[in-house]
Length: 80
Image: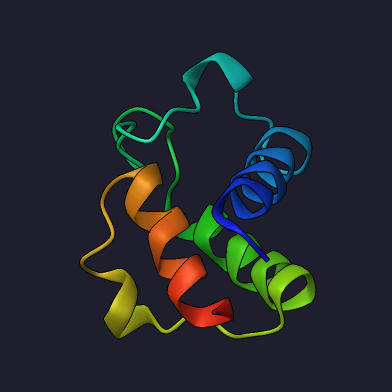
């Protein structure tokens, strides 16, 4: 799976499942401040990522992920 496919899948579930405005989805967007992702949303994201990409998010690794671009990169590193 390439980076573009990852971005498309992530953006799709952010819009469809978390109801985030697609206009806000760009690599520099801060997950908490710009996209409004909170701890409850993160629980949903863990389940969606497991179903979509086949691995479980590790909270200790996610602590360094602040932007949407970093989130794409994190997923890309796990599915490579």
